[in-house]
Image 1 (cartoon, rainbow, N blue to C red):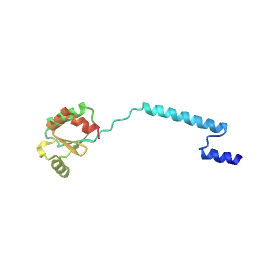
Image 2 (image 1 turned 90 degrees about the horizontal axis):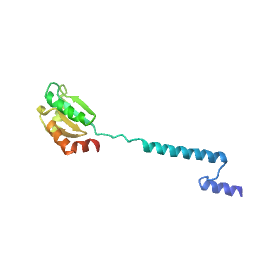
Image 3 (image 1 turned 30 degrees about the vertical axis):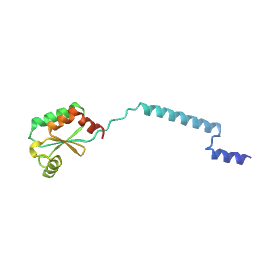
Image 4 (image 1 turned 90 degrees about the vertical axis):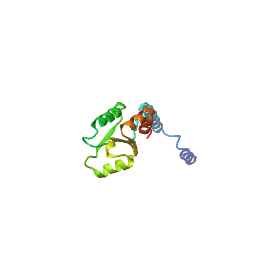
Length: 136
């Protein structure tokens, strides 16, 4: 009879146990409830798409400052890359964004070229910039 009850207990996931075992299970269940409450309180951090600002040193400084100011006003994290001495990257940026060297600085959101400052403003006003950065 004992053997039959042991097998039934094991088959049912061991709902029967010693007082120590039951206390251990109760503590574990309480700890689990506490952790679930804590995880519900933790704010999820927003992930943003990478924002890259390609510029050429000593060129279009006013537009570069305006671009930086616009991106900073929204609190976006921006990685700035100077392409003055990097012809390969400059060629990549110009080909991908379909622009000339004179259009720098150029903003990319992830792999998507946004463009120079006037295009950036259009994206910002339409809400496309926020969607592109925060819905990555």
